[in-house]
Length: 216
Length: 110
Image 1: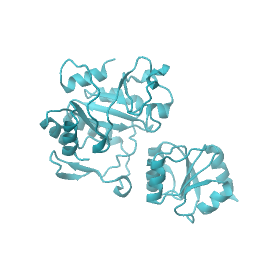
Image 2: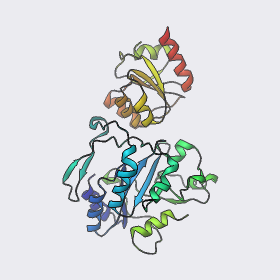
Image 3: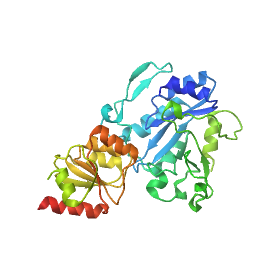
Image 4: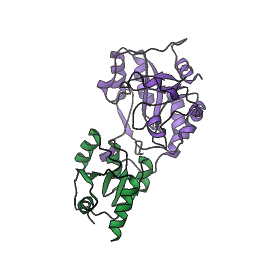
């Protein structure tokens, strides 16, 4: 999946708001956002941060530059010092908006950063972004999978449910008062869905999306 | 002791035995993958309840002798496939992690 291909697929699928959230990096966000904007989509820059507890948290930012600063200042210094092994985890290619290869990320992005889950909401908000725990209904790399129960003290007003989430899951008593989002979580082009979920926003901007996600 | 000898001695289930003659010289118990990767020793048996495909990747990176899924956990389809592709020794036991680790330690001391 490359930035330009993904943007094209999102446009074909009729999506309106899209975001690129690679594991622990925003390295391809500028390329993706430019390619998506060229197709008329509202594109947000982000990452799927893997915390030290092996919990995935989707972090979204107003623009690729801010996302890049978040990565460089808040995440990069706390990544594993072990380099990536492309034979095991695959290559991590950096591209421009036309899928031209710019380079390869040598860091091990697949493993957790030394960032505690409880730090994430404040860290992301400090960069004008919004964060929500990913696929909390799944057993792997999810807040409920690792912690067992929702902790309201963690300051996440929104949580992501996966596509396969059973309908009554959101009625768990510990999830009362939470708002939910569902997205494709596409790892491959054929997992990009047709548009089927909506957000009620005052305007079609990244700021409005982030405010909706961050509202307590 | 080899992985195959340990499996026979301790009654581990063999999900995928890629290198039965691999030597086991110790153990490591842990479920946080990033933590395990930086700490599990080479040639150890890694005891965990995690069963997603990143377990195989971490086992390779840490160069452990084998993975032992405890508490009766079975590998999911992706993990089994990845272990097969990458040649990771993948075993299992119904015992809890503490019991399985203690039994391996005793067997290694004899």
